[in-house]
Picture 1 (tube, helix red, strand yellow):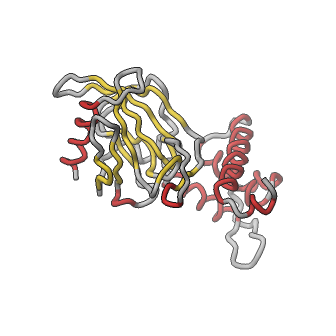
Picture 2: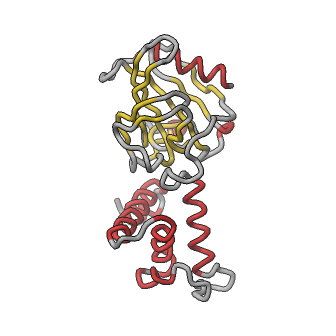
Picture 3: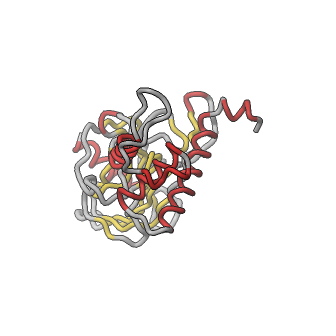
Length: 242
């Protein structure tokens, strides 16, 4: 990729930026910093360069131009946005109920899963899984975006979480993959047991999409074969909650 191509490619820029942020986050975490201070130190280094990390709470550290926020204001604003997008997964958005559900593609349950939006389609709306479940797989950092509405034919689920679910009414057990998150709850771990309403991730456009949404596809346990009953169970939830 040439410098000109890179400058014209937002997806490539986002991948590089996310990689740089993760590296700085790992560096500060290795030094023992946690929580709010960890995020604001990384933001300070981003704003003022590596030598500015210790100024993360300094209101006298000025921006580069008139009108720019001081260091304290800037790092606080970054931390606020971090929490709004799910944070470490252990802040305010622990559990809840999905609002503004719109089913955008109720596929034949025997042929695949269901596409829908929460929050009436608003970007980064938290998605809460409605049933008790066990975490099977968590995929983060798969942030590439393939916009199908622009003719891109590449396929990817993006950031996603796989869960194992037992329907309390029928006793049916199935796996379900919920995909295309902007961010995934940072506290999710494989093997973790989740209560109904657990925060899974924020509605995004990672992977192959035509707009902000969530896709949940049910599979026969331990396989990639669609589970028609599992899909019907989840579709029923969406219809009743709508």
